[in-house]
Amino acid sequence: MIIDLIILTMLVVCAIGAVRMKDLLSSIILLTVYSLLMAVIWVRLNAVDVAFTEAAVGAGITTVLLIAALSRTRRGEPMSAAKSSDRFSPTLSLVVVLVTGAVLMWGTIDMPHFGDPNAPANLHVAPYYIENSYKETAVHNFVTAVLAAYRGYDTLGEVTVIFTAGMGVILLLRRANRRS
Image (cartoon, rainbow, N blue to C red; front, side, top):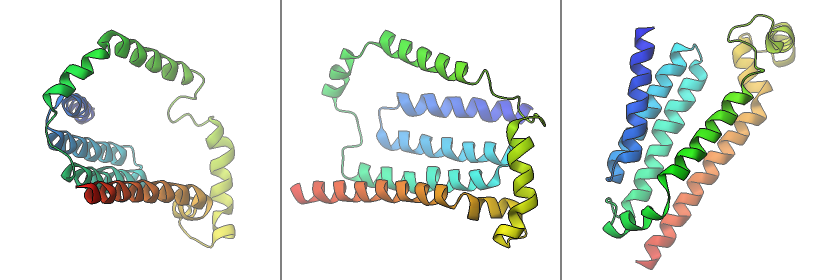
């Protein structure tokens, strides 16, 4: 329990630090640390596949893309940007964050408790995968069968989004390079 509180505290510090930093490279580094801490949390929740994805995408690819974009821009925040950001009210931002948080918390009221054996996923979906995954996929490990076969389109969609984002960054950087 204490390790979870330490990791949570480190997550909050990284998030606040990344937002408050004036140096963009420092913000990218803090976001990378944040992503690696999230991977640790996923491992602690026994979701190793999600942890692997978080480490690869969040800390790996995203960091590379952000640093590539940063290499084409200035590292620091210009003084004029600080003045132009004053037009956004901190009070309005706080209200938006609080309302969004309240709506998200309200949306979780009807969810079953964590680990509830009577949750719909445990009563209907999991038994089907356990009983039928080998027959339908010929994969012995039903977790692998779910990830590779049943969730194949989901994984394809995730890969498509990552590929599209990477291509978009490359095209933007190429266009910025041609202008200079």
